Length: 98
Image 1 (spheres, rainbow, N blue to C red):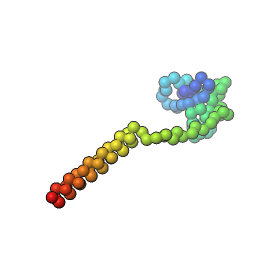
Image 2: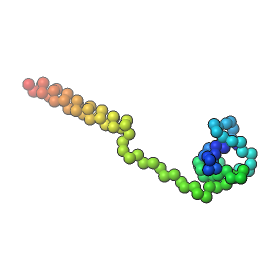
Image 3: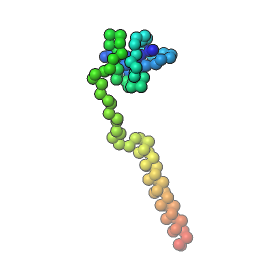
Image 4: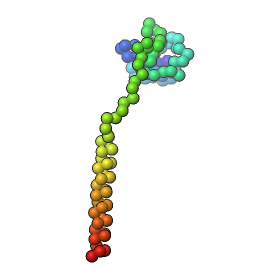
């Protein structure tokens, strides 16, 4: 198994086949539930053993603070379309009424 470990000993990634950039070879005992419970920083590599990180805190999901640039552009296009559509409707209606 190859592990990617931070300078604090936190295991942030692993692979059982192949290689990862910055990984180290680990041939020690692997906890039974390691693969099922794995989350970055949930386990530590201490004294050549994989142990639970007692200081692990579940990351909080980030909530966007506002619309993305793409959403703003889509909204602007929608407004422009509504303006142009209203102008076309007015011109079509004005031309047939005389």
